Image (cartoon, rainbow, N blue to C red):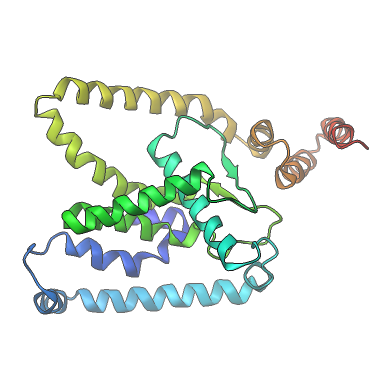
Length: 273
């Protein structure tokens, strides 16, 4: 849970996550009364109370100091249906990044302001929710892990999108959810490493480790400074106004005025003057 500290948005979900996490260590036959007694005797209830108070204080302080980001709603799509679609699209986008992170090496992903029910991320999100319900129904431990991963993503699912002109998803916001989904995948994978499919499972693990190392090696240099990072982002999202403005600010910040002029001229030419 210390990974929540790497992304402050994640920490707000801890009061909801800890009861489910502690549930993993309770007897499968325990009912509501037994669970309540165990939570109370082990001091968990007090932990939940303090965490909820800390999360509430943090959210109140954040909203008070950044009111325009939470009450202007300039980036929020109109209508409840479109807002639901945006949440599902965000969930599907993050799900794709979690399931196969090697498909898109962009530092973040700009989302559609008006997604449709037929969009692939929306369909993927619906399938993931159905799988989570099925796991909860048949296997409590696996279902709780899946539910923990979904709850950990609640603060970044664009339920209240920030009015930054564009809505996007970023990998840095899913450090904590990744823990639960990794545990969910590790249990059956570990069983296969000792079963009849151990050769295939071992090959998959080796491939995943090699691909991860290659991914880190190919992208680490882009995080050296603001200029390299936003230039890299521009290659993947050239139509993003936020990316373009950050490239300009990065070039100005290190006094690269000639590059700034050249880049501004390129953008002006692409936009037709």
